[in-house]
Length: 398
Image (tube, rainbow, N blue to C red; front, side, top):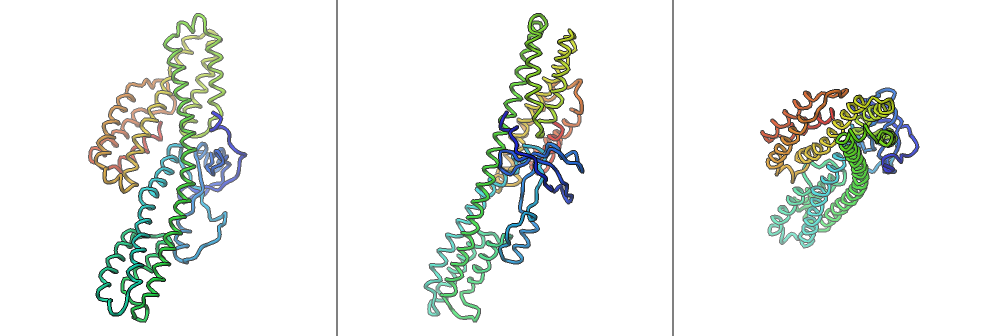
């Protein structure tokens, strides 16, 4: 539990939720500039959610427009909110995957084509212009395709400008000029290398954050399993508890109360808060001799933990489905992903129906199942984007 609870001292941050900004108090998680929001006077619903700094798109467009590097300023950073640890993990994973699978290979290909183009324009002369212009045009088209004509990054846009101008094979005075063409290629390569280095830095930062978030998730998911196993054991042997294990069971319940209470991060905090109340009340009931009432409370807790475990499995399906909306390679397999996800979701829905939710507070299985049914319908149609949206809505209730 130490990794999720060892938070730094609270800091004041201004976070962005849509077009709104809120001042919150938050603690850094593992010193990776991922923060757990602990207090949000203007929007209490933010408590337990997470935030991390991102370079805002409006500033990116400003950089592109001005074509110059702006000095780093703290006020330029936007703190974006993620509703729970799983949402943050998905966001980090999609960024890392998108850069590693798509951006880096495309930049590498573009640089290789630029080197080949440089080799051609280096030998460009008036006498061989007609012979080489076809090769130049072909290589330029390959570079443009690798970079992407819709590029928005400043370095890639600058590289595109130099490469596209080279397609004509002449300089601004309409002369065959290999020196200018070579200089343009070297400039384009330099811009692409600079972008590649920047992407590498982004990947390393986000990969480190993802690794730490995975650690937190693994720690908390393990705690869920431990509590669920404990509840299954004592409920299966309740007569033993009733006869000779009252003190031991009470001590165990109080131990879990101490372990679960400090967990303030969503989505675990919501479940743990209910379980802490149920465990505390069950301990008091056991001491007072109200064993049937204690058992009923612990049965509710056991069902809550089972739902929490099912949430973990639903998250795994959701991640694959959402990946098919972000990643180009995954989009090609969207149909297969949708089929597999639909089969897994069908099994999980059956398990959800079997959970006894009587006595639970702030939970509607009917609404959850209805939203998951919409996700199933979208998966049958192969519409992974709609399915991912329905997954997100459903998981908010768990």
